[in-house]
Length: 424
Ligand code: GUN
Ligand code: FE
Image (cartoon, rainbow, N blue to C red):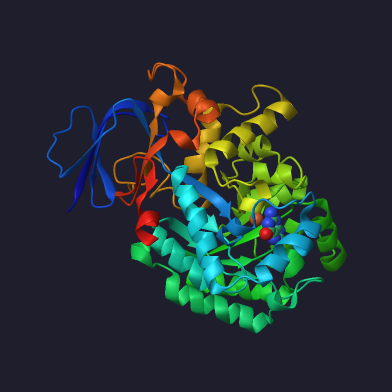
């Protein structure tokens, strides 16, 4: 079995005791098998991590790879107008090739900035191309085709028949769930209640239970969205999802900004998971999610950049800072400490995906999804007795990421993404 030794790292383990260790990590196959100082140097591959921090790869729990190519347009719009006037017309003209290159571009940026796992949502068509790009890029990804069989002002090419949407999803699931040696998993992705009939959502409920896969959707992101759901279904968003039996531990809600007390109770009691998207929430002027409150209730919360046009970036280092800044501005300087933010970006994301036994921390037995961060670029002496969490969250940038491993495979080295370069 191939072995890799990472030597002399400062290890931010993100384990349950938040240990920071100085030492070596031995990887055999795709798993971490030993952590400690002075491990024997018998591996065929040795990575010298002197002056570097070793962190778990980031787990981003809300991405739209198919939107990477749509970035950088003048788009001072709120969610519903932005979807109708910018995003849906562009998704409607996506081709198999443009989805592939949009996804590949996004994957390169994600790996470059230390992200090793994503929860992703594609568009109505050409999801196959996104899976091909994910496979080529070597990212760990839970992804699926967007489902939308309802709603006004949806361009014709994106309008689906309920049965076709369900059938296309099942066909993709049967082909891609567990692909790439298990790095790829399928999730049903009803876009949001606004674009889905009840029949579709009930179908997703039953099929996701039958196949044991996750459901990834947007909920309570924007006040107009909530008003549409209330007008059409007579209930608030999360209450409606619970009413039709979708509020279960396999449900992951992106945004969750405008939750009332009953919705928070439902999320907690049903084991639903939440993704925070701070850059997107600010750029689309959606609002401020009450993240400390959700965490205090024991709700798992991850972080995701959302699609690139939502914030012009897929960089978790930026998203972490925004997560802290938003809470501090609102609730004061102690509202969100750096360790909590880094935990959300790693173990929090793993919990949202139900993969906390496999990824999210540097621990023996876990998959070797890791990043090495060059501390010397911080222009501060790289001692691990200073507040490394604060330095990583507030001072690090994606330019400091030096090496990234997924399943023990080096996918980025010397600041080059090897899998993507190989592809092009
Ligand atoms: N709600 C429904 N679709 C989308 C989308 O593509 N992006 C965001 N941010 N919110 C959505
Ligand atoms: Fe989104």
